[in-house]
Every structure is written in C-alpha cells, then in structure tokens.
Amino acid sequence: MRLNSSFFNKIGKMLDFYSQFNPSPLSIKQFLDFGMNKCESKSYVFLKKELPVRLANIMKEIALLPDNLLRTPSVGLLSNWYARSFEEVIEFEKTDPTSDNLKRFCMILSHIRDRHADVVQTMAQGIMELKDSQNIEPGMETSIQYFLDRFYMSRISIRMLINQHTLLFGEGSEHAKHIGCIEIDCDPKIVVKDAYENARWLCDQYYYGAPEIVVKEHNELERGEPINIVYVPSHLYHILFEIFKNAMRAVMETHQERGDIPPIQVIIVKGNEDICVKVSDQGGGIPRSSADQLFKYMYSTAPHPSKSDVHTVPLAGFGYGLPISRLYARYFHGDISLMSCDGYGTDAIIYMKRLSDEANELLPIFNKTSSRFYNKST
Ligand SMILES: O=C(O)CCCOc1c(F)cc(-c2c(C(=O)NCc3ccc(C(=O)O)cc3)noc2-c2cc(Cl)c(O)cc2O)cc1F
Image 1 (cartoon, rainbow, N blue to C red):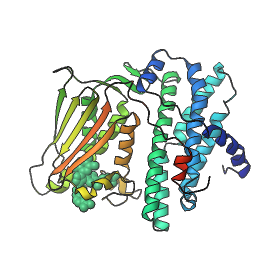
Image 2 (cartoon, rainbow, N blue to C red):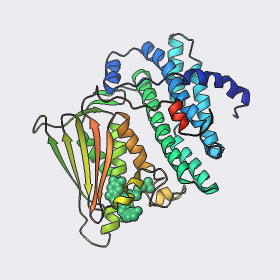
Image 3 (cartoon, rainbow, N blue to C red):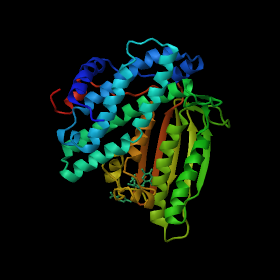
Image 4 (cartoon, protein in one colour):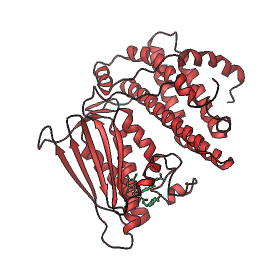
C-alpha cells in the first residue's frame, strides 16, 4: 500500500506534536514493579502516549538523513513501516481502556512487532545501496554511525515496551520467574552455555571443529554463592552469541592447521556495582589501531553476505553483530569493552548493572542538539 502525501501531511502534524516530548526511560526495577502488580489499563494509558513519543522521536531523525540515503528503496520501505505503525498507535490516543480497545491494542502491538522484524537488515541493505551508488566520505560515515546507534537503540526500546505488554497481557502463557521478558534470577552461566553451544554448532559446520569452553565464577559479594542477575536473558544471549562467534572465528582462523585448539575462557564476576562476563580467547588478536573498527557498522573482515552467503559463511553476518550487541549492553546502562593483544588473543568484557534500580533504559532523544549533527535544516 503506497502512502500518499496527504497521509504524510496528516501524520506530519502528529509527528511534530509527539516529537516535542522526550521519551520516558524505565528501569528494570520499574518494569518489574509494574509487572508484579500488573494492570492492563495502566499499561495501555502509558503506552498509547509513550510509543508514539518514541516512534516520533526517531522518525524525525530518519527524516534528517542525507537525501541519497533517504531515497534508497530500503529506507523508503522501512520509513513506510514506521509511518503506518505510528498512525496505528495514535488511533488509540483519545480512547478509553475498554475491553475491546485493550484487546485490539494488544493485537496492533503484535502486528507492529512483526512488521518491523526485518528493520535491521533492511537498514543495512539501505546503507549498502548507498555505498554501492557512491563513495561515503568520512564525515558521512560518522553521521551514519551516530544515527544507526540511536536508530537501533530506539528499536530495542520500542520492542522492549511492546514485548512486556504483549507478554503480560497477551494470550501467551506465563513463565515461572519471568516478568514479561525479564528473568528475576537469571543465571548468566546458563546463558553462557546456551550461546556457546549454538555458536559452536555453527563453527563446527564451517571449520569441522571448535574451541572448548572453560567457565569460572567469582562472587565477590557472597563468596562461593551462585551468581544471579535480574535481566533480560534474550539480550544477554544476543551479546554472548555474537562474541562467541567472533572468538571462535579468530581461534579457528589462527589454529586451523595446528591440532591444539586453545579453549575459550569465561569468568563471571559479581562485584558491588557490576556483574561482568569476560570472554577470553587466544585467536591471535587484532591490532590496537584496528580494534575500534569492530564497533563500526561498515566494518567487517568478512565479505558482505549476499542472501546465499549467510548460510555458507555462518560466523559472519552484515558486520552489525558487535555494534548492536554493544547497544543491548548499553540499553540498561551496561557496556561491552574489547581488549585485544595483537599476536595473542582478545578479551571481551560485558558489563551489566547489579542493581535493577540502576539499570535504566538509555534512550536517544531527538532535539536541536541531535538535529545539528545531521547538518540539515529541520
Ligand atoms: O561479519 C560479521 O558480522 C563479523 C564481524 C566481526 O568479524 C571478526 C571476527 F569474527 C573476529 C575478529 C578478531 C580477530 C581477527 O580477525 N584478527 C585478524 C586481524 C588482523 C589484522 C586486522 C587489521 O589489521 O585490520 C584485522 C583482523 N582477532 O580477534 C578477533 C575478535 C574480535 C572480537 Cl569482537 C571478539 O569478541 C573476539 C575476537 O577474538 C575480527 C573480526 F572483524
């Protein structure tokens, strides 16, 4: 369905209205407290304002992208997805939380989540269409890096709100010890093993072998006790899966001929402020001068996968794995650090906040400061 200009004019005024509000960040504790005493009407009233605010903030930023990127077929497609989703949510603006509206709202949110399923690769395709059509000078690469960090962080946050509402109030069954997609006592060791096994399966497919894993724990607060965290296991899994794929690729590329494949060492540490997961490999490392490239959306030592390649070179993707993994870590005020020793190997450290009331959403805010970054008149 092509959206005509009168459609964009109509939502244009609403975009201006909703983009003047700043998104309201929630902490994991607030998500938990709300989910423990869940009330669908309250969630509906909050989301029918907050979702348009978050959508409008990032849509205003999409509109500031360079015209040659905006005009790529892929960015045009995903802009239409955002416009339709924004329009569907603002239809609830002046409605009350009647039983029918609550049911319809839940259904609309699920449709929006499905509509936006391929946004990451569609945006990546748009960037590649731009790269293929013209050279990207360093200044534009910096702007695109800035935009993509904010665009994908916004998407993570919108999907978190949608998942919490649909899991708490949709048809699906409740999971013990889960509040929506949050696990009350998530065991990082279990997520480590799960991510390792799945990355190892891919590694075996391509290299006919894979490094073993050694996992240790150090609980500095309650010595000898198991380590648990209130977190979103799927976020931690996404991060670990990417890091294990990269570590295995480096190790196998540097030890393929030699028999002895060194294991990947993992230590999980609970400190006063942070819970860390350090993944250490002996994959030969990357020079310090290149290490920062790994967080660039347009860097990857793997050839860019065409649709067919992704199945033949399973450990490589669009090169978006690490930048987006860092966004998942930063989303609740954690981070990822890479410390590589050229000629030996790489340590990747994942930081998470130990306390759920310190794990606040980190949300991009559209304002004059961010607009200036795009050197385009608003
Ligand atoms: O395509 C994707 O999505 C995956 C995109 C990403 O693909 C990569 C990949 F899996 C692994 C590495 C890599 C290398 C390497 O490759 N070293 C050889 C070289 C030597 C010199 C230079 C240079 O001079 O630039 C670059 C690499 N050494 O350590 C790592 C490494 C990287 C990360 Cl993030 C990690 O968590 C663990 C690691 O062991 C680099 C990647 F880039």
